Amino acid sequence: MFDIVNVAASISYLTAVYFISTAGDDRRILLWNMVKALTSSETPTVPVMMKAEHNSNVFCMAFDCNDQLIISGGNDACIIVHDMTR
Image 1 (cartoon, rainbow, N blue to C red):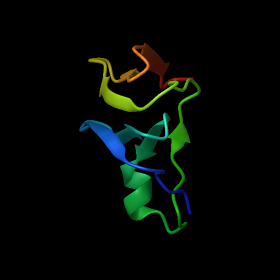
Image 2 (cartoon, helix red, strand yellow):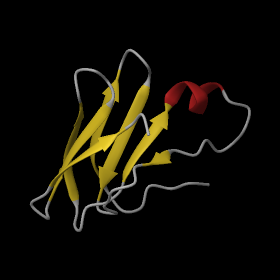
Image 3 (cartoon, rainbow, N blue to C red):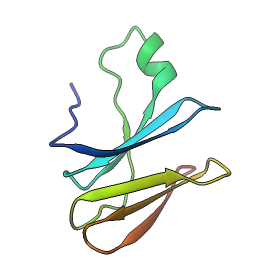
């Protein structure tokens, strides 16, 4: 099973394509396909982890208006742009 480690400090969602991203104390940005998670006979559904990680807790994130990027901000005073198409 794939667990979210520690606290999920931020959750964002895309309504058009049913993706949710989570971030928090574990410094990772995870992208979850909710259609697969809710309808798949395979358990558990594994999220995609974005390649870049913050050096500290992640406090906020959002999808861009074209639904291709996730922008995250953390306690490390960095903003990271994650490309979901890669």
